[in-house]
Length: 584
Image 1: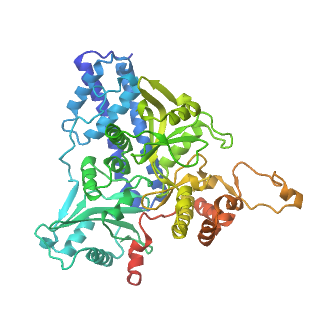
Image 2: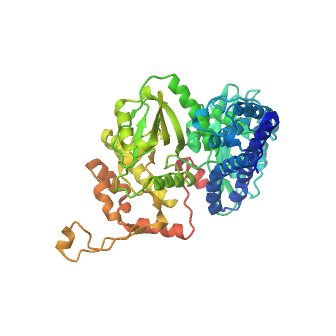
Image 3: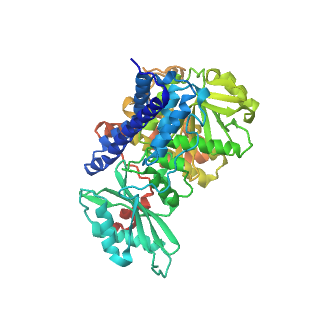
C-alpha cells in the first residue's frame, strides 16, 4: 500500500528518494564510462558500439524507475501542488556538497515532469533556473593536472603524462611518437621562444574515449600564450598503441565535440569542471553542446532550453517556415536569429513515404544511438514546448494547424507543440549547389559522396539521398539530416537491374522483374543524383561506384564479416603517418 506523503518528513523522504535515483544513475553512468578504457585496450569495437547505445538508454530507465518508486511509496503523482516547492527546497539542501548538482537538478525535473501536469512546470516547482553553483567543486583527482617542463624536463614530463593515463597496453614506438608531438607543437609556437616562469602543460585527468580512439586533451601555457591540444591514441598496425596526431588550436579540436558525432566517454567525478575547462579551450562551444558531447545529453537539453528562453527574451524576429523544399514527413520552421531548426511530424504523412509517426520516432532514436561518424546531425527531442504565439507568422501557424493539428495546442497567448525535434541549422545542399561556383560545387559533391560512403561503412543506408536531405555546416562539411527512410545496410538487398526481355518491357511504367521490400537498385540513383553539368562531372569523377551494386555489396559483406569502419574526426594530413611518413 502506498505511503501517504504529508508533512516535512515526507517531503524530505521524497527529495531523498529522488536524489537516490539520480545517484544510482550516475554511478552506473560513471562505471560504463570507466569501462571504456578496457574496451579500448582490448580493441572490442563491437562492445564499444553496444556500450554507446546502452548508456544513452540508461537515463530514461532510471527516471522511470524513480517515478515508479515515488508513485508506489508516496503516491507522489497525487500530491497537492503546493507541496512540490517544499520538496524542491529539501532537494536543494541535499545538493549542498554534491559533486554533480546540475545533473541532479535536471534529474529532478525529468522525474517531476512524469508526475506533474504541465500547468505546474514553473520555477518554484522545477529547476527552470539553476539553484546550486557548480563553481570550484573539489574532485579527486582534480579535473586537470599541471606539469612543469622547466622544472622536470620536457621528456620526463611527456612520459609522465602518458603514464598517468593508466593505459595497460604498451606503446609500440613511444619515443618516436613523442618526437612527432614536439615537432608539431614547435611548428605552432612563435619564434624565438622564451619559456616564461609560468610555463606548464595542463592535461585533463580523464582521457576521452570514442570509437577506436582515446584522446588526451589539455593546453600549453607560456606567459600570455595558451595553446589547446588534443592527442588521439590508436592501436598501431603492428601491435601496441601509438600517438596518431597532435591537434592544435580550437578550430582543429572543436570537431571532436561536434553535434554530428557519437558521444564521448570519460570518467568524470565533477563533470562541470571538465565542461568549464573545455569552454576555456573552445570558447565558441556552448555548454549545452559540451555536456551533450560528453554523453550528458539530458542536461545538455536543459541548458539548451535555458539558452533558448534567454534568446527569445532578447530578440524580436518571428518563427518562419524554413527555406528549402517542403518535406513530406516533417514541417520544419526556424527563428532566423537562432542557429537551429524545429521539426514537427505531419499528422498525414504522404503515402509515398510508407512511414508512420512511430517509425519516424524509431528512426531518430536509431540515429541517436548509432555511430554518427560526423555525418548525421544529432537531435534534441522535446515534448510540450510552449512558444509565444505572437512570434509565429500566420503562414507558419496555418501550416501547423493544417498539417499537424494533433501536436498543437493553444494555451492563452502560448502555442504549445506537443512533440518536436531540434537540430543545428545547416544550408540545404541543393540550395548550396545552386549558388556555388564550379570549384565549390566540385568540393561539395565530393564530400557528399564521402558522407554516403562513411555512413555505409558503419551500416547506415540513407535511403532518400536527394541533395535536399543533406546540409552544409559552417565548416563546409556535408551532413545528412533526414532520417525517415534510413535502414541498416545489412537489411538491404543491392541488385543489378536485369536486362529487359524485349523493348516493350523496357518502356513499360512497371518493372519487368520482381522487387522485394528491401531491394535497392543503385543504377536508379543516377537520374536523381547526377543532374547538371558541374554536379555530374564531380560525381562521376569521385563517386561513380555509388551507381552500381558492387560498392554497396562489398561494404555490406565487410559489415557482415564483423568489420567496423574507422572514420577519423580530423583530416588525414594531420596524422603523423602522413606528416612524417618516411619516419613512421
